Image (cartoon, rainbow, N blue to C red):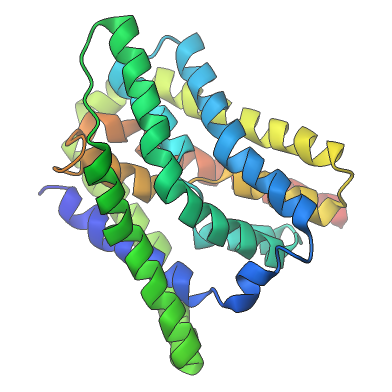
Length: 285
């Protein structure tokens, strides 16, 4: 079974789910706390890809895994980050705003960041890596932006329906991601096992470094605990499904190997963030 036929429907559903959570207030909250929004955006769009690039370069990852790690860093967390923000008693309104803005902005920044990385790797390794920017932009619009806009439209026209759909899809989102991870593992068992140690270390360092740097970044802004926790979650939690869809898309990279960092990232991300939630909740008690 080709995993792309599983990941694309899951990704479309997740983006539609995100759209059903958004309304006008999700974007107008920028005016409520502009410094926090700006800080979160810097962390997600600038800081995180730089950290991923640095980790991949220091660990001397092969070009395919180098691209895969940076790709994960360029895909902002979806609605799951809002749930985690709620669990740590963060600023959920800020979380929703950051998720909404980053999900739209990265549709257009991701292709150019990945193109720059592809050119760097082509120069360093001598291996030609071609990135069809136009096709990637079009895929982002079709698979990410359109479902999100449809979800927003449903929220605006039929808010009661949107609540029901959101509740139903929200329950199915995590099991769907686990199904995707299982199918992908069956397809690439040997590659995942052979590279689990180095990629496990790489994604763990990426997650911990992004959480640490975003914490330091938010502290320089003098924000309260709720805002700091939210920024840490938003920067530390990425959309593995989006990264897998881009890596395995027959129109973009058509590479299952490039998606392996995203699969391992999805596992480690949930473990680390659940531990973070546990520590925060225990300290509050």
